[in-house]
Image (cartoon, rainbow, N blue to C red; front, side, top):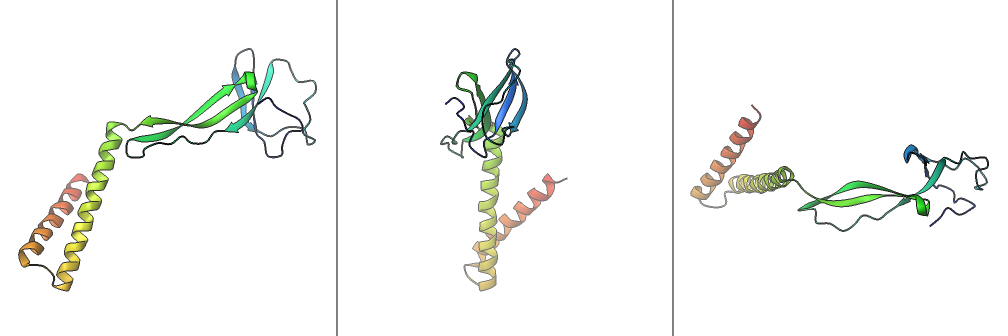
Amino acid sequence: MPITYPIPAGSTFVVYRKSTQTILKKGVSWPREDGQPITNLDPDIGILIIVKQPDPPFNPATEKLAPLETPRPGLEEYWVGTEVIALTQAELDAIAEAAADAALKAEIEAAIDDMKNGVGTSVVRFQRLEKAVAFLLRKFLQQL
């Protein structure tokens, strides 16, 4: 959508040099209070209205959103949004580790509640206690 006048209040713009396609400034307000066209503008200076694009759908278990900016000089627009990219193996591993830690923490809390309330057999309580100690030892050793 080409820029229309008067410029709506709150609109922001990108100023760029046409000859080099170099962005000079982002997020600027329209310089005229009346929202009308700028007179005597250097012909090598272009102005694009910033258009916020909606986030695309994605699966947070395997994907994430990354910033994406797309100049569209023919439309006098500068699109700002996000794109979907796959999580790296390191990010997937971190998510899996956090989920395992959360599950073990819930198991430990349940074991502590059982011990406080005298619920369950002593064998089950002992097995849960062993898991808790192993978890805490592993966490301690990771910090060394």
